[in-house]
Length: 402
Ligand SMILES: [Zn+2]
Image (cartoon, rainbow, N blue to C red; front, side, top):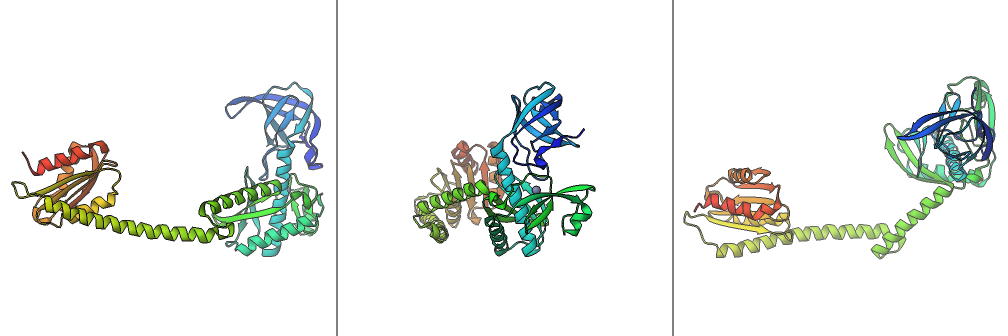
C-alpha cells in the first residue's frame, strides 16, 4: 500500500494524524534511528531538487524523509508503537522551500519564454538555489530581464493551482518538459505564465514568493548555473550584501557607490609601492655591498669571502641583489643566509674559481635541505632555519680551511 501524500492536495497542511504501519531500526549517519512508514503523510521526502521536511511524529523528531518506491520513509530519533500518531511539519523550513521551489518554476519559465533558455536542472541549497541553463553564457541583461519579468508576475499575485491530466492532455496544452511516466500526471500552473509537471510543494499565489533575486551565473560543464534566492532568503542575502558593501566603504573611507573606484585606486597604489620597494631593496643592496667590499680583506689564498646571516626584517630578494653585487668584485665569494626561512645564497666572481653549486651540495649534505644552481650562483633552503648561521660558517670553512 502506497503512502498517501497529503501535500499533493494541500501543501499548507501542517498537522495530520496517521497510522504507523511499520517502524524498523536503521542508522541515520552513524546514529541509531528508526524508519517509519505511515498510511499518509504531510511531510515531503527529498526529491526533484527539493530537500525533505523536518517535523515531529508523536514525540519523535523527524531527521529525514525519503521516497522508497511508492512509500515515504520517515527517519525518526525514537521508536514509535504501531497505531495512530499525530504528525506535524516544521513550517518555517517548509514554507521557505515552497517559496524557493515556486520561484524556480517562475524564473525558469521567464528564461524560457523571454530568452528561449531551457532549465535542465534545479537545486535547492541551504543558502542559495540554482538552476542550470542550457546554451551560451547568459548576459547580464538576460539575468536581469528574467528577474524583472518574474518579479512582475509576483506583483500581479497570480493564482497557482494543481492540475491533473494525462501526458496527451498536457502535451496539447504545450507542456514542454519531457515526461517519462505514463498515466495521470500532476502539474503546477502559474496562471498565464507556466504549466509544469511536478510533485513538489508550492505556494498558492505568486505574491507568496515574495521577491526573486538573481545573483550570478557560472559555467557548469556545458551549462550555465544561475544562483537565485526568493522570499525571506532574498531579504537576508540583500541585507548581508549591503553590510559587506558598507563595511568595505567604511574601510576605504568612500561612499558605498564609490567602492569600485576606491578599490581600483588602492590596487594601483599598492602596485606602485611594490615596484618602489623592489627598487629600494636593490639600491640598498648595492650601497651595502659597496660598504662591505671597502672594508673586506682577502684571506691568505687570495679569496675575499663575505658571510652574512640576515633576520626576518630583510626580504629574500635583497639577499639575491646583495650577493650579485658582491660577486661583481674580483675574487669575491658571498655566502649569505636568512635566519627566518633558512634561505641560502652562494655567489662568486668567476675569477674566484670555486664551484658554488658543489659547495651548496656539500653544505646540504651536512645540514638537511634542498637547492642547486650554477658554478657561480647557487640558491638553497635549509629544513631547519635555526642552522642558517652555522651553515654559512661551515661553507666558509670549506673555502678557507684552518
Ligand atoms: Zn515544482
